[in-house]
Length: 412
Image (cartoon, rainbow, N blue to C red; front, side, top):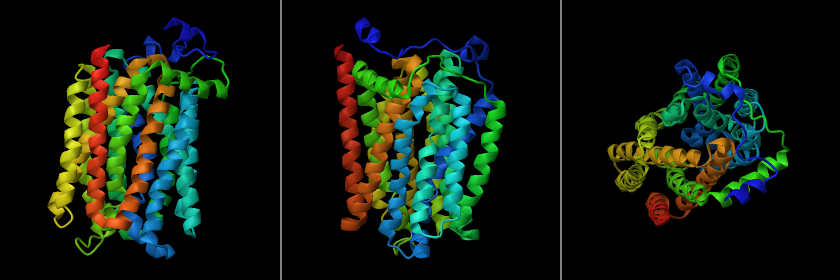
């Protein structure tokens, strides 16, 4: 569609910046590792509160349902950052942008750590959530700076760090809460964020999009990308449904595990989350599969894993062993599907990866926020069985969209 391209006031395929040229292809493994750590810290900070909901509710004298809304607040603010801040990766120098966002996210963690009321906690969590999208500047940057034949692996490595950060965040938060109270979690996180941001500034190569365009043009061009690439929206919606399904679990699992059927402490709840470490390993495997063109097979397998995970959680209401198996299985499905879809999206128009990622990840986390909110309502009105039904329905919708997407591609 050449006409569609020439009608844009902002070039959607800007020239490759010098710093992202062949001189920097094959990004050093140590730099990729640092990017993975930074992404893990950014994303993990949005999950600290999940094993702490019971303690937060007791400390501030609010209901557990109100405390659970901090999970939704983190995801909504993250989605706002995705749509408003991540597209700037196609306008500004990416290293400076990523480091600045990390420092602001660290400030949000600091506010959360010293919150004297639930209102200040909401403010800190929302600030940290919005600016923690630094991770989504780093993910496409890994693809930009890597050899094209290994871009899936590079993205998979950075995403593995991001996912390990999420898993470690839950476990570390639970342990630190047991040792020094839940405030300690956010205070230490703010310090760590600053240290890693400074290291990132020293080690990360510069990467700039030379196109001189306005912020408004950057945002408007995302609508053009969605119209030009129908698969961008279909894959984003697919991942959003999958994440909504799993977020219904994440926003309520602490309420089940701390209740009378299991009676776990914050630390124990955090350790249960470690069962999902396989999901981080799946990210790297999915990246390799994507590089080999096995995206359809990977997508089908991951949707089946989501459904199997919810079967385990149904039994996990009274069996901790089944709950742990469910954590293992459902994280495999979610992260494998996410990496597969993200790879497909990045290949649609490589020169517009920051904006493509913004569209994809905004949709993804709108799904997460919706799933968290629906999970809280389901818990309030029907308890754990209703949570499981909700998760299964969302996973089935994800599978239906996968079938439709593959059929539309085959028909072209």
